[in-house]
Length: 220
Image (cartoon, rainbow, N blue to C red):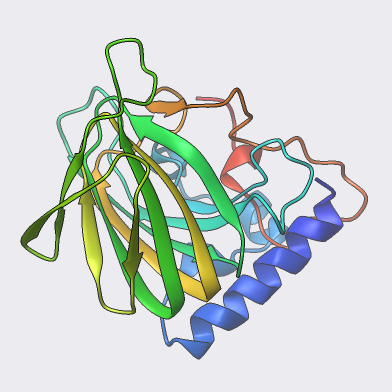
């Protein structure tokens, strides 16, 4: 992805969050000058990957397959401090996040506003493939069973609990603001994508960054 493209995505995301009156911490608006001139210790921000995150999952087509995220809080894997995480995400209309599950993380996915969030679900089997067994999920405190590969549609305000090992693919009908509340998030080791894809994009530096991405941070 080109830096000019990620800049445009971030600026559009910032405006969408403002429209929904979803407030972000000061980190969201730090410029390159701030990062370079401040004497603050940023180690927890780097370790926990807090801040802006954009991915096209290696597709080269962000509009079709991609996601914009901001990690608000997170713990560090292996540490016994924070054991939880929170993200806010923007799913563009028709934009897909491909099928994946988490080895360790259970998460609630919440439609915070905008369009409809559609999730397609499968159990995983012992070889980490997609099982054909019915899927049991909890939606806002109510148990529900759907067929393997079936879909759940979440309107604004609705949420679903995704347990460990549960394959989920999602897309939006209309631009949608999506929340995530979970156990500690580790995008480097806890994601099992059904397809072989890239989680963090390589950035072509055609212009200066408007805001840093977590993929710009020093390697952990």
